[in-house]
Length: 112
Length: 121
Image (cartoon, rainbow over all chains, first blue to last red; front, side, top):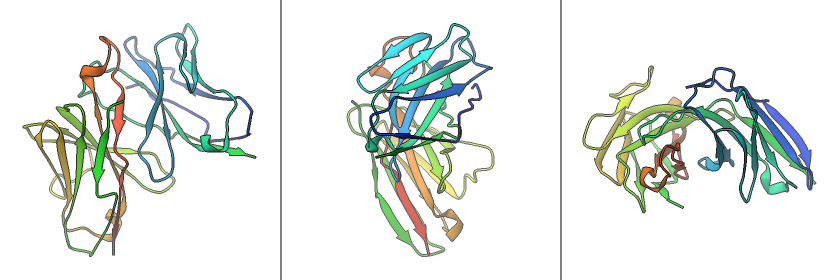
């Protein structure tokens, strides 16, 4: 399991695009990058996952450069409800038994 | 998407008593479930891996006799905090992957329960 490093916290304003970068220098060839979101007193929720280049879904985009040593979660036009902790994970696991180990996460605060 | 449900969502117990927390996969079968503990302002810490029909695998430093895990069916895992003490007060979260629902050779999305807030008084 590759160690990931993220900023401890970030602040932004409603309507802005927020980019959270995660460093995973020791990522393995088979590792995927997955981002989760967690609101207070709730379990984490899957946001997006990718292996390389760019992945986009209805809530976010994930940019992964060719060397895969980092990744950036992009949240377009954030709102107050995007205030949460965001976790970046780099893990291998085609099996349901593969562990999911969380790093410190980034506490994102959105202001009006 | 798949749903993982925990019960209860909140429990208060007296010091020295035991508390059982249930984790159910509602629309998929989970041969493996994971239990986490989270203290305020901290990240999730993996406690153990629950395996259906066999013994759980505990992370280093987690007391297996204190945190009893039973995974008796493909949709239910339970965590029992035995002889609870105030320092066991925490937010406990379970998760499972819907492996069958994932494309081949992709890390299957993990689904998390809503968590159980345990307060030991």
